[in-house]
Image 1 (cartoon, chains in turn green, purple):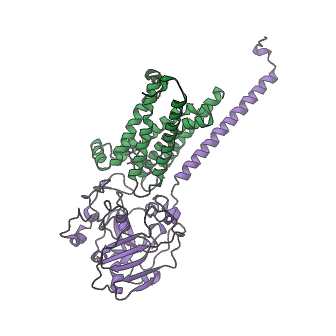
Image 2 (cartoon, chains in turn orange, green):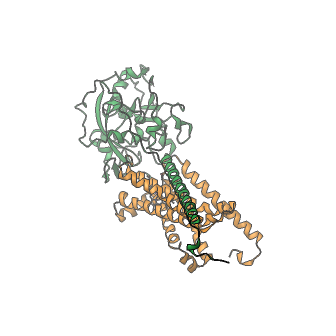
Image 3 (cartoon, protein in one colour):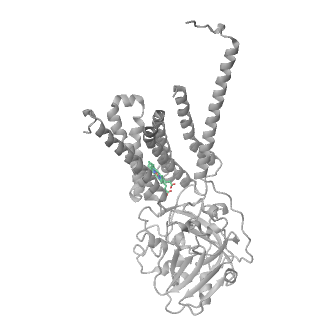
Length: 207
Length: 323
Ligand code: HEM
């Protein structure tokens, strides 16, 4: 693929990822967020966080299966969007659910364990977002960077768990996310096993 | 190799290149636009905005609230919010989607069977049911176990009027209620998110309490399907899920009946489920609530503010145990 085509695809993904935000802002401006706007925005941003996390995790398996190497360049932006929507999700909560009362937020974490789990997932995403630049990849070294960024699976698992813990009885969607996550994770483990078996270079052996 | 200087290139060639670039930019623009529209469409599909509910049929002869019943001067929740934000799992577990899914729910003909430990069991047609007692407006707070609340101008009549008609036997101690089970009309009953049909129950003295009503309308009009048409229970001092919707069966019994949510999660939802800020749900606090239409949070009141009327029903009971 020509670099300019690759750039164009990147632009498509960048712009499309902003569409939900634009529509959410549009609905907010038109007071069209339903009877419980806080719940609507919290749920929409939470859902978007989890969806973008899954999309970023799907990039590598898809790239390997299709051989479309250009897909790889879009992993970072999808991950950053997950963090971006996660930040909006957190901001909505701290602003409209707790009114910036951090003490009451701490109390809430104790009473609503699903908040603690969501918060843990969000905390994990922070260092990953910070170290997402090329400069940081170089500074950490590819291997260390890779190891650190495996934590995105933990963030995903905690995100799906957070969702599962908060629903009252309809667990179908959270379980679907968990299943998708399991497939992505399973693929990663499976392909890692295969590489260690077929490759003979000693450096690849896990330590 | 000859490198042509720009002035050496024939003008026709330059035009061609421009057209080519233009076409390319045009195609890119179109592709961008198409994907943006598709993404927007997908977002809207997954996150459908609520549609306004048409106003219902006006109910005739609605009386003002009975003078013995303390009303509230709190601001009413808007018709739009009451009819677009509903917990009615028979249609959808998404509160914003219930109205859309229930839009075509047919509630005529409708019968309610009243049976069990009574002298005069009877199957009531809806029209007969509505003639048992004068329809009254009752403005009640409704507190959902999820932590939000509304103020709703119900139209209905005391459940006591119906129970008096069928004459409970002396060994009747509880009343069990049942919602319609018909997956063709209530599409989410094909899933197993809850055990269907939805069942609820009250102690007989709770059922006979003057605040307890069977509602057939709100805002002076017939109940919209999403709010439990054609007839539902309203028990204002208990969490919303106790106020069972679309009732087809009322049975007087001797033993405490099973109720849907307490079967689903016995540690989270008790038989009584009285509104109580001091007894948290295992997964969240019940101390405060979000009044729909308001920005901040309010303190939740014990028995949802109806302690004066109902606290005596529970004297001597440990409300932390009997939650
Ligand atoms: C920063 C800490 C976080 C806090 C305080 C938080 C808080 C919340 C709250 C209050 C809700 C709404 C619950 C309700 O309406 O009943 C929610 C829903 C949700 N959150 Fe979070 N969350 C956090 C992080 C995350 C993260 C990192 C993810 C994803 C990886 C996530 C995904 C979700 C999802 C999927 C929902 C449910 C959406 C729905 O019901 O449709 N949350 N969160």
